[in-house]
Length: 142
Image (tube, rainbow, N blue to C red):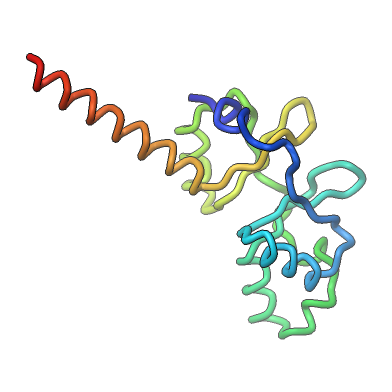
């Protein structure tokens, strides 16, 4: 299955944050939406990812005043992205290798989705369970 197939049934309204937004405002959006990360947009382009980890690391380094800084100063950039034709397994492998948990899905320079490692792990588990059930059914009827 491709990443594009995984996101095709989703709402196309992707929560994002502007690079000029304050860290405090972005944290509020993460908390309100119960998200772990947001794509960061500047001039219509995805320029980074703002995550819970970015906040924690920066507060540990700079203290709570980091909440007044702009997201562009603390985000992870450049963003690691994936195309819609990438397999779910390839995306999962990329996330594991790069030690990241979120990927913007890009098509011809435009973000068409945002996937988390949880989305991909859920797909893998569902697939493995379906294969196991098919094997059980095959064995029982053989």
